Image 1 (tube, one colour):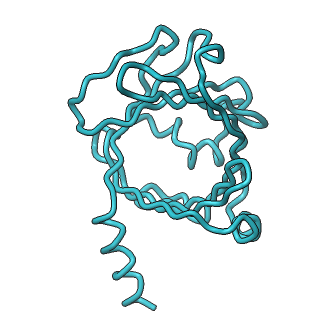
Image 2: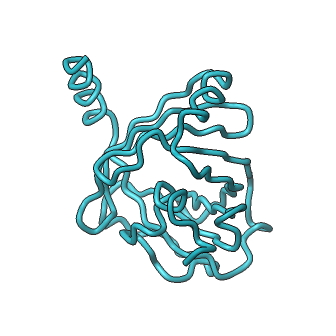
Length: 169
């Protein structure tokens, strides 16, 4: 079992590096969206050094493993795989308490796509946007609806919002 973990970890480290910036949303964005989907997700592990997430997005299931963030919170390793919806529904039952429920809207901004998440339930009232970048210093067109940057503020990580919901701050 330990050997398998290291093999999976080696694949995980070489698969992908996620570089993203996060912002609070302060203006109207829905009319700009070209797509949206409903997301429910839970965490099998939500410790900062690694998270294991189960996500149901519309009618598809996913498992995602994320590593620890860089010191500024901008970069971390990420591995994701689509799994059968039936398996995702079963795995959600194994997750830690607190499920994230949100709608994700996709908005074009120059050469980038901004992902805007509108949260429900215990995180009602929180609207946050993310933009994925190719490098930490890559520039992007910042739409008017982006407010304060919260990159690196762990309170805004979904894995933390399931433990410490926005409505309880």
